[in-house]
Image 1: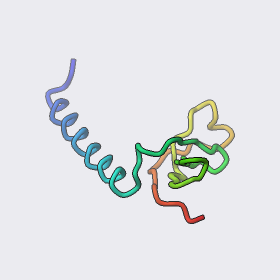
Image 2: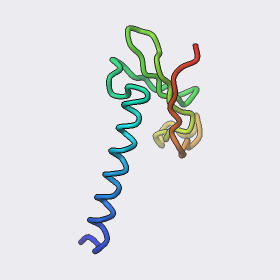
Image 3: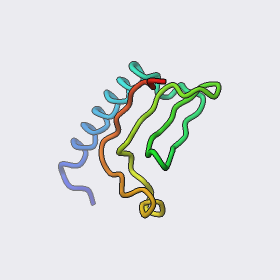
Length: 85
């Protein structure tokens, strides 16, 4: 059973997620890189094309519980930006 407020909350959350995803697409081309990897040591997502890292995201990405003993809980915001290399 869903509370009365749930449908409006869900619709608003989806709308906000779409706005955020559209911004990431526009600003960083997220969704169009040929590959992405997760570097456990640095706790960063690495988006690349033809073997060259183009965008990184992190350093507060959630880490699966099985890995949390190695790198911490990692819960928090995702910060995305172009690489500086």
